[in-house]
Length: 121
Image (cartoon, rainbow, N blue to C red; front, side):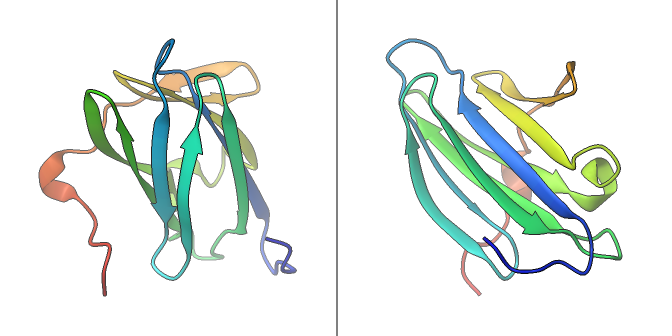
């Protein structure tokens, strides 16, 4: 995305670290932007960027599917990430996503399946 920002631009990279032979299918979106289906080979990466909300309410969530897993995660929330992630990498692992920001790694559990975001409006 190349739109001009009135707020800071945020850059995220997601890497498939599920393990050998496991392809990752992911579909990320926010309330008003659908980034479409992506397919990552083992060790493969995909990046996207966006303008974060001035009010800190930006949310991007992803459905991630692989052989043996179908999980959800809020890959960016303004409350958790706005002061940390100007540029962040996410390692997608079977146990949950891990955020890497300037060498500091924080791992998170997958979203509870009962808190899944609605894909259709």
